[in-house]
Length: 200
Image (cartoon, rainbow, N blue to C red):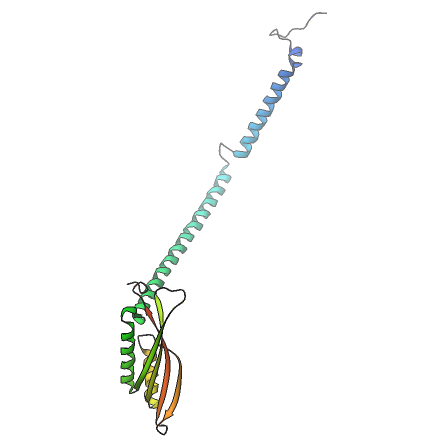
């Protein structure tokens, strides 16, 4: 029986029966399939015009969101700076400096008493720390006054309008001299600040 030869002189039947060749062909087919799937998954040559338009729109939306967030953050920073400045101005104006606190407070009370026509009696004070602050202290004063109803009303009014930020916690009144004069004991709170607390 004559043997069959290929035009190139290779016996293809015996070659195809060789398991090494079969494995190489199978590996080659898998490699080509993997390359096709990678191209479809990652699109290394760029997407279609619609894909690029969608990506551009998404990136522009992200950019707008980031710009809006930056604007909101800047506005918040400006508001915080304005609030800090207002806080410093308020404390510098209404809170007495600790270095001269007691003399300033007593002088202000004497001025108010003289202007309202009230006779100021003895006073006492107690200084306490304010929880959560290392720059502010509270002064609790006990002030005794005597005068007519009108002068005491004026005293309370001037105390309320004082730039020293007095808070009348309570008061006790007793009538004297046939009811023409009143003896009143005021419990008053005010605050003092250190230089650091006022931003000075």
